[in-house]
Amino acid sequence: MRPVDPRLLRRARPARVFLAGSVLIGVATGLLVIVQAVLLARGISDVVLRDAGVGPVAWMLAAVIAVRAGLVWLQEVVAQRASAAVKSTLRRQVLEHSLKLGPAWLSGERSSRLTTLLTKGLDDLDPYFARYLPQLVLAATVPAGVIGWMATGDLIAAGTVLVTLPLIPVFMALVGWATQAHSRRRQRALEVLAHHFADVVSGLPTLKLFGRAKVQASAVRRVTDKHRAASMSTLRLAFMSSMVLELLASISVALVAVGVGLRLVEGRLGLETALMVLILAPEAYLPLRQVGAQFHASADGVAAAEEVLRVLETPLPVAGERADVPDLRRTPLYLHDVTVRYPDRSEPAVEGFDLELWPGEVVALTGRSGVGKSTLLAAILGFVTVERGVVVAGGSAADEFDPVLWRRQFGWVPQRPGLRVGTVADNVRLGRPDAADSQVRQALDAAGAAELALDTPVGEQGRLLSGGQQRRVALARALITEAPVLLLDEPTAGLDADTEATVIAGLRGTGRTVLLVAHRPTLLAAADRTVEVGARKSPIDRLVERELVTP
Ligand code: ADP
Ligand code: MG
Image (cartoon, rainbow, N blue to C red; front, side, top):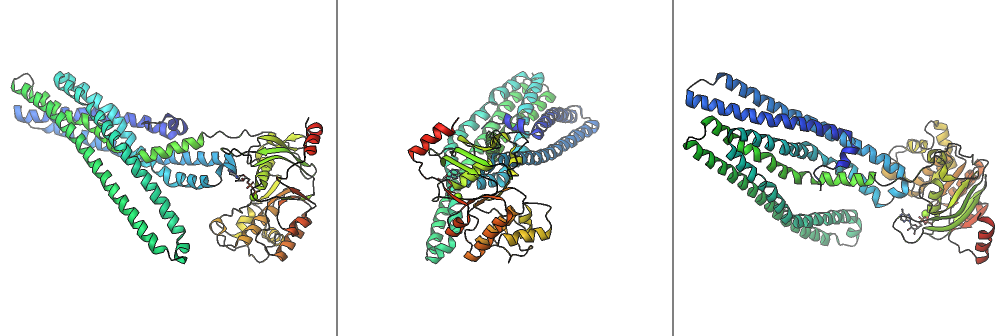
């Protein structure tokens, strides 16, 4: 882990501003530390040697202390603001970037990982900005200034500090090195534990049903016990390592003190200088020790930031820019030799697929599960990259067009309906935000969801609706768009025969082009044409295709 990731500074302007501000505050703090020591030394020697009052010096000292307190406050305020700004910048950037990467990239476990990362994960950046970075800046500025100033009064003391100071980072590195394997093991145990808990809780009804809940409870107890023991041993290590550092710093200061004392007795050093050096010496070690303590507190945040940067550096598929998208009300859509391979899969999800889709046609895609039907719809929508072959409309490849304009040609019902929290009407209006209530009602009726009131609550991921109802709401959402082509991924799965008949009649009534993924005979019969995905082409077909179709 690098102390400051330059990529983070490049991505997030607030972080750059913050770092610059922290350096200013750090330099000012360093100067004030020196002034404070000088004033203290002067005040004490005035009282001891000259028997004078402490009047003006005391006031100046008070002022310096007040300004130092002010700087601490300022640093805190700046850090909180910077942290909030950086987090919101990164969150926005990741959201925008992942939207551009599309649903294929986001699918599966990645979306839940991203959710954790963008919510809790990034919050761990707070200690990084509020504690670690400012401390790091202090560690770079204060010791240098302090040693420099000490050198003007007592070269030997400055030399002692200069020699012993590097011992602190060296010992920190040694301790870190020794505990690294340990803490990594514990981290892994924690992850296992988290997954185990999540699994047990989500499977609790099943466990209860089979009378295994009690057994799980004792398993959880055993695992947590082990975890507790591991945590305690890590804590022990942490305490030990901070004690080592403490001891090291104390011994170093003692070395300086002994030297200063001897020279004072021999009369080679004035009291004021000796006091100044003694007061300054611990200040040189303090920031370095604290950096070590904050390093661990901020490690999670830095890991989260690295994960974010990894997402941001995922290259985007090159998007077309042409705005003259052909009107699919009049232009047919061709898929030619379409082959799609998901990243890190050896086998293509769909290979060499051809299709013509004429305006007004209802075409059913069939084929066993996993043969690539949903992938084909995603390829038409431009959500996955076509490895070989093309999607063509009006004589141009689909990926030449601006993806946003291209997708306006399509109403899509994904295989998983993907509803949001809100009401049924809210969800349908995603298809057309300015739709009137009557239009929403009409779309719902056409989708066979006559029984659903507009203000029926939907819940997270459609949870308050049945599976069939969710699909029909999604269908209504597609129907309400004015898109000339509807791409429907198993739109009537989970519907009873009567409702299905209504829905199909509704689809035909619109006069729009429909490409639907279907299994059921009724749905297949309602289509003008059925195309099987994954059917092997005969050699003669391949030959004809190669000779006649391929340019
Ligand atoms: P169908 O809709 O015909 O059931 P899919 O198009 O969903 O099939 O999937 C086709 C193949 O691609 C399957 O083998 C599936 O495992 C794989 N697949 C689908 N989505 C992804 C994905 N996001 N990442 C990797 N592989 C995927
Ligand atoms: Mg599918």
